[in-house]
Figure 1 (tube, rainbow, N blue to C red):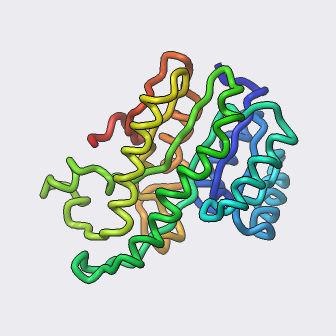
Figure 2 (figure 1 turned 45 degrees about the vertical axis):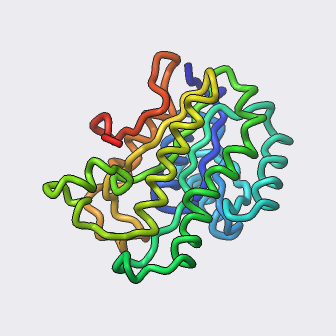
Length: 240
């Protein structure tokens, strides 16, 4: 059961969903590592949250860089003996282009962060997660990853074409399924934050950051009876 001794790390946490996730977890008196690739912005966020009475620790981490991820894992291991919760939030969007006009370089750039970055970080932190009595990994996905939604003309996701971003999140969902089936004792799930207003969508989203992080927080705080290998939004199960 999660308590004040719980240790968590959130990637891409200097703004948006990552910042709100880190803020909410720190509000539970957890020990939270706020990870971001930009040291100045990350430290500024830590200071902002400290002004709210929340104590977080910054760690520099660029999910697209092997050396940065390895250094971050080493830095965290020097401060704690385990990691209980890993929230893989860091991600990038891509221009909304006609799929037929999307080249491989555009897809590769998005996959480097949204897919390879999540594997890179999870792999690097597995030794620390294995030392936890209740390891949890949350991958921040998207409703756009759902093949069922994409095939349903009544769903808004069906009309949104973005080859690079949507396919990267679908790939991430399978990564969740693979890890969940391979790692006994872990709770590994994908979270759909809905459509929150963030920099990625120029703040056109319809959900607040709190609403957008509801599923993430639920999955980060699962008890031993909680699910693994699933895809959830704040209302429940999302179809693959």
